[in-house]
Image 1: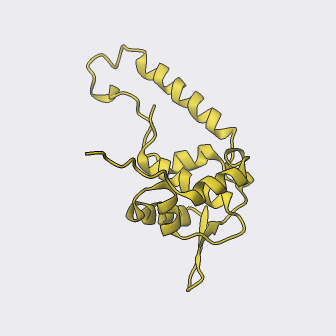
Image 2: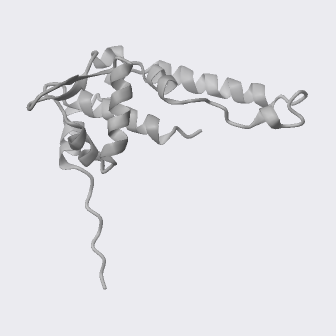
Image 3: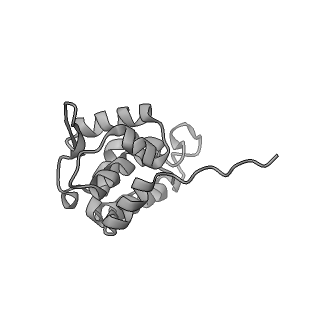
Length: 148
């Protein structure tokens, strides 16, 4: 199973904010840290704000921060909010689906996957907070120079 880029970016934003609990972060800073699109992150942060996970502070010294303690943010709930569906196969249009057991087995697999995520919070993901902060502040590694 592979999560969407939207879910990946949502988790990355939350991890970044949890790794920097004592400051307001900017979307530009987070985009630079991961080497990802500022525009994509704007959409992600907007939705995280609507869901009550992130809050923004306006103004010159503004930015974003977690709206809850990391211990109160369930990884499973974040994934459920950001993924549109968990269909692992297109059983609805398959001619054998009325007699096939695959859909039930895949449903059990998804339930097990989500059960594992439900056992973890954002705090579990940032146990090495100071190391995460240093890595994020350093930004993505530079692309190797081409030799010609």
